[in-house]
Length: 379
Image (cartoon, rainbow, N blue to C red; front, side):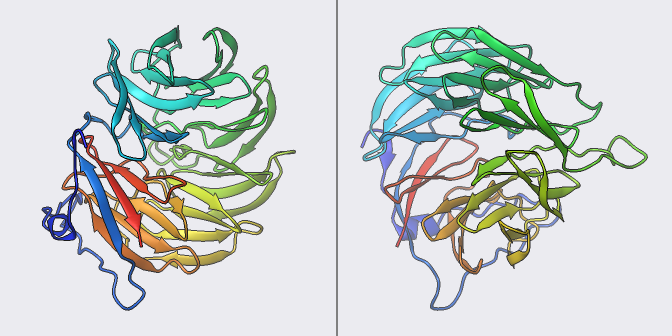
């Protein structure tokens, strides 16, 4: 396989441990007992391209048997998900900061100067280029012929997916001090849900950008600008008629999509991310704890404390497991039904800052900060 090499369990275990804590190195939790999960490492690439900054949203995506990847140096690639062989590769003239995102037959990426590019998914050829008002730090989204792009200055743009022409603009003033991390909008049908740096959640109409409702997840409070930071930096999620969002130094909340009415709210802080699956909503908190909340009322289904102190990625559901990367280069596998830590797989000596990518074929792809892509399969 071009650019790929198989790795045995022995070689995997020999990867040097990373000490990425801001203080003393953290003790590494180890799964134990007969419930431990075996994870097979299928393949690992040589670095495909550096991701450069955790603020850049350059997570890989999967569609129709292909993996799409972009890096901070302007490379965009399509790989076969079956054998990881390259299908096409393009290099854009500008360093990229967000994408790729699948938009019908287009692939959307954006750069740190506010340029948005649409490539043909089949060939990688450029179809159009558009400009927004500032750098793009969140993955674009696509729904019903509209590409939704959020720029770092607080604006949200609706672009025609076929031509790149601006259809609408939503604008809000951002606070004086915010995290250098923007959440990507959530889309479903004709709805776009945007998490703002002010702690507010806004639902827009994808057809014209008009506001349907607004809801305050966390009201900024405190004497200093630092204390008043309440960013929705983790991507909101839409599932089964509800929107879920969490704030930094604040809370997680569920809101009815039709009306914007609060369903439930719990005090917990996160700028990493959440996921919804079945009857539960999963959250990677800022302190490294992982929570499962009942989707209907917010009651705690379980909480996993063994990863406390680690900086985790957004959680991803892969089969019967919740999968999260961390800053020490590990992939952590929690059992969905009870949150038990059943496997920790070290894939790199570099941090994993983007969420793992789970495919319908049962393979989980992990991209570290250096651009090394690893394929894992749980047994």
